[in-house]
Length: 441
Image (cartoon, rainbow, N blue to C red; front, side, top):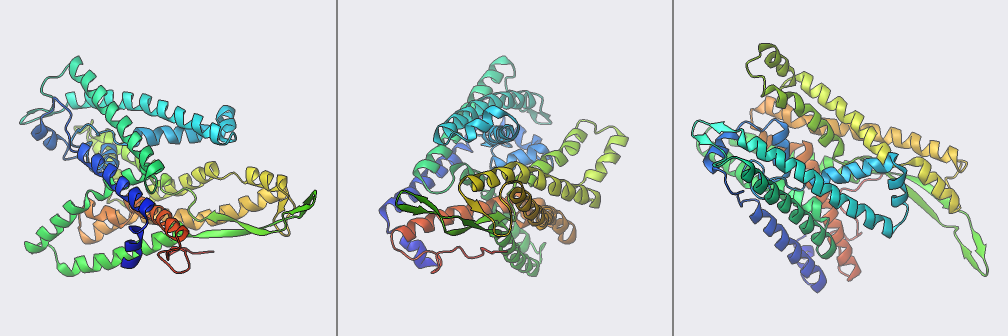
């Protein structure tokens, strides 16, 4: 494996892309520690201690801790992600966006431009909300905002919106001139930036004899098993055979070959967990505004992360959103129509409507185990916390959004590096040229 990584730096173009990517990611991490002007860091640190299990905590995770520190990158890349999701959802119901998706490269450029405009609008609204939120924070050591007012609001909006646009630009540059998907890498780097802090805390607990070292060894072994399972499900596909009829055009014969349609077990990726988690954090977020109401606080007990009701509801919502997002991301009718136009058919299935129904039936069956696995992975950190007593920062790496994003982005980046190696006649990370852990079902 070391030799394979060494080969990655022997190819000038690949070496340039890797260093370019690392340089821009370093710039992103430096910007994540540059504070927004006009804020007391000490007061802010005290005010942000209780956001771990709220919507703000989820936002802070995706921004790599920048939100809790109110830095210039406090909004992170989430406005861009939100705009992309909105555009994708509109592509399923709005005819204009459906036409853009079918216009090829020109349509993609228009969609990209609309996504940028959407990012600017969402970031502006969110930055103004953050400015108002920061002005309302008050701690025993003083107010978080040193000089509240319209001037602070305008400065905060300008600073944070500019930071989000700059992050979006960094992601596009990485995608175009670096290696891997830039936006995904930025999110992954923000998540793994918490690893040094988590490791330091664990070492401190072991040194103070507050943590049994045997427990950490067991957790490391469990981590290996979970990551292997996530890789297997992420790469797992169900192949539907497709045969193309021969066509004679002039003196040339086209078609006649056999191929397949790869239906991924986890077509929806990490999006179902993000949707479900955002909704499940709403009650706890609202509960912070009614701390003196006994009825509301009693109801909030059902939505505590250590309550079985929370686990059941969270898992059920993930299964629902998995089917919902899969239906948006993969259209069997469109696939069947394209196959029919190109002379393709599934052996034993009539082209057209019957083919669409056949694909949809298989997709429904394949999605069920994928959705149940996502639900299990999402609630496993909470179960682990209840069983072992570890904190959320450590448990979050044993499942949920963090692990799925890290594994998915790492596999995608590794595949791109391997494609460069194979094109330059170097051995890939496997002799067969296939990433370890990929499964066919």
